[in-house]
Image 1 (cartoon, rainbow, N blue to C red):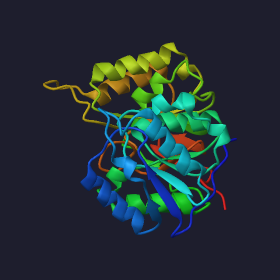
Image 2 (cartoon, rainbow, N blue to C red):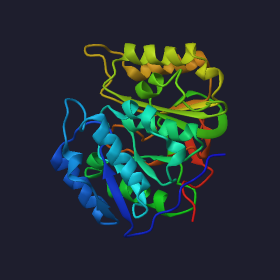
Image 3 (tube, helix red, strand yellow):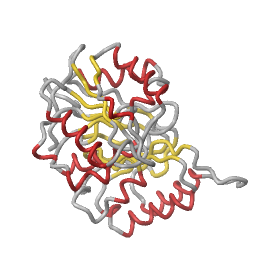
Length: 298
């Protein structure tokens, strides 16, 4: 069982944090406007720091994250952007000592999501602030509903069945490349019985093959019950008639677990919010992902 955080209410105070990479200010401001329509977002000026490919050094990012997390006035944390950097904080982040509240983000935030699931907590895989400003009203509303209503989220539909079958289990995963980097660490949760969610961006097909094969060699596919593939954005091989989905289709058939591809989750134009850690039912034949538990509790 994974524990859900407390639900939000309209006009709750939420904090924007940058635990990973630096970001474009205009995209951030557009996302801030979206959040301001529902909640009372706040942030520290240090969020705009830059240190090479990071949003400031590790000390700054860790202090910002833990301070917001511990602040009783702050009801939820929203990541400004992914990029890279969360992994650098995990060894200094005592998740069990921090209060349970919604953590919202995706991409590099997969490292934090997995660390939370390793401690039995539910978190929210959803657009980061810089993506929210270009998200559709439907995507935004789904996120708000997920955070505020203690009812199950509407199901999602994929575009293709790779391997038929049905399976149930907790939804765990996120970005493929980040997930593989946590193999062999204490921050990867037990995947036994899970439905594995995977998505990625700008990874050429041979790299997807390599990371998938890493999962296979590590025994991941002997533990999970099914695979839900989101979008693999800008992963094409230039000048080739075949693409990432051709490679992933073959790889999925090799492991022979129920697998549907093309769920609207990831780095594409539509990134639907989903709760990680909740029990789901994957029907690969019908290409549906049904949520069986709410993401939050009243």
